[in-house]
Figure (spheres, rainbow, N blue to C red):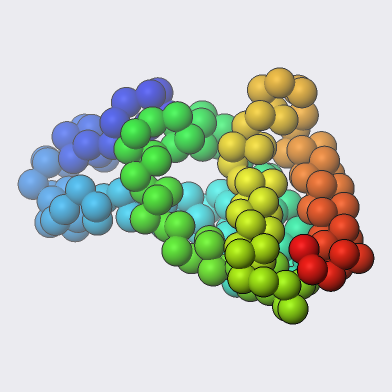
Length: 167
């Protein structure tokens, strides 16, 4: 995927120096292979656990993720810009969504559900590989600079939500 190719059983077998059937033994379905890749990305690059429920935890998680994005920018770009990468990321969305909803609920617990939902969506846009990629590609920022910019955005956004109260 770092070279822009699809993640396939044949490609994994060739890269690992094993027969394709060996790969199938470990990953019977394409979704299993993709899930293993995502697990590797989370464990070795982004260190994301999607357990943040407050501002400080969210910012710390974002900083870890952005540093991991920079550690293998080619792979993250492939995950962002390929249909296969989109499929893999969509399967992980329920965990991410729950985290952003928990953060929004903690900041504006009395706001209507629709408002809390929009706030959660904005938090996800800010803390995303797409935002990291944009700051990297168009603003020449490294992970630390991008994280500083996104932290500023998150803090300003949450401060505004807290001050308004209704969202």
